[in-house]
Structure formats: structure tokens, C-alpha cells
Amino acid sequence: MSSKILIIEDEEKIARFIELELGYEGYITTKAFDGRTGLELAETGEFDLVLLDVMLPKLSGMEVLRRLRRTSSVPIIMLTARDSVMDKVFGLDSGASDYITKPFAIEELLARIRTALRKTAIENAEVLSASGLLLDTGRHKVTMEGTPIDLTKREFDLLHYLLKNKGMVVSREALLENVWGFDFTGETNAVDVYVRFLRGKIDEVFNVKLIHTVRGVGYVIKDEK
Image (cartoon, rainbow, N blue to C red; front, side, top):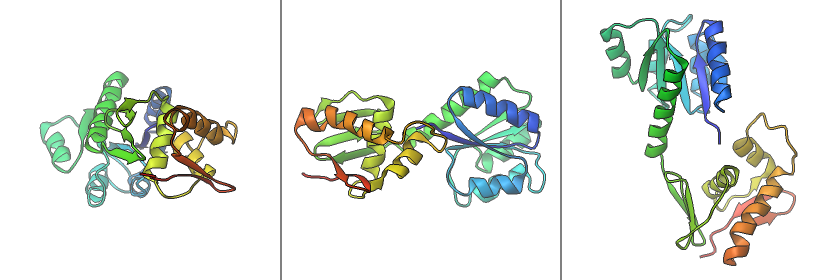
């Protein structure tokens, strides 16, 4: 699944430039032009990373950082024209994941974003299982009783979401929203097609019944072992 990044930046040209560059890299972005709106969006918990300007109207970036850290551990990269050591130390001590000074090269920002997301992925790595199948998010690896299963990124993301909701019936709409994304404009039967792909690589090869269809509702993974 593409990472979702919130850009809180009051200079609209800069925000738009960052939005375009992140879009080229495959990230899903949302913009906010003042601190109060940015904080409200960040508190929804829908974002994988926040780019936060320090000098913001309505609520300063430092105040947004301070309030957000009460409830969230989302990676936050501070964007600022201030380059003094004390400003950076204050931001990092207040919970910022990183600090980049304007003007910056977009390549450096992208590298820092990748580093922050990679660190979070490692910290949040988990191994999910069902019926002898193991999915390791940290290693991006799937095995069935030790035998590796080669999946595409979309197949992996779909299997991951179903496993995270093991025992619960997940609707096609929920799968499209959480695996394909809000802006998906393809065929609505995409879920059914990819479930068939997964069954072909798992159920049929290993003679298991992993993904069950609940007619008229969606799909569910049940642990049969």
C-alpha cells in the first residue's frame, strides 16, 4: 500500500511542489495550510508520515508537534527556514523524527522520508499467520509451512489486510479502500480477480482453504489449523 503523507505548509507554492514530487514517487498526499487544520488532520491517524513547517498561522509547528506527540508516534519531519542548532535540538527533543532546513534539495527530503518510513516499518514489523501460512511484513516474505510463495506487491498487500482481519468478513469496498486506495478508478471486480490470483498461488498449490467467500458480503481468512 502507498504511504500516506500529510504536508502542513502555509506557503502554497512549496506545498504544491512537495505534493507533486511525492506524487511522482507514488506517495498519497494531503495538504494543510495552517497549524490548526493540520493538527486536526494528523490526529485522525490516517497518515504514515507528517511534513511539518515550523512557522504556521493559527498554531505554530512546534505547538502542533507538542500536541500531536501526546497521542501519536507518527514520524514527523520538521521543515523550517530556521537553521540554528538550538531550534533543531528543541524540535528533536520535542519528538520530531528529523529536521530539514529550507531551502532543501528534493532528493534529500525524499531520502529522509524513506529513512523515516523504513524505521517505522522495522519497528512495526509483524508476522501474521493462518493455516500454516506465515506473512512477515518486515521481510516482505510469505511462506506456507516453510515453502516460499512469490507474490506481487498488490497480492501481498491484499493478503496482509485479510490476515490483519483474520476471522472477520471484509467487504470488497473495504478492500478497495484500504488496499487499492481512495483514488482507485479501475474495475470494481479487481478484488475478485486478485483473490483468484491468491487462491491460485496458495489454496490450489498447497491444498488448503485459506480465503473464504461470504456471498454478497466479501471475504474472510479462517485459521483451519
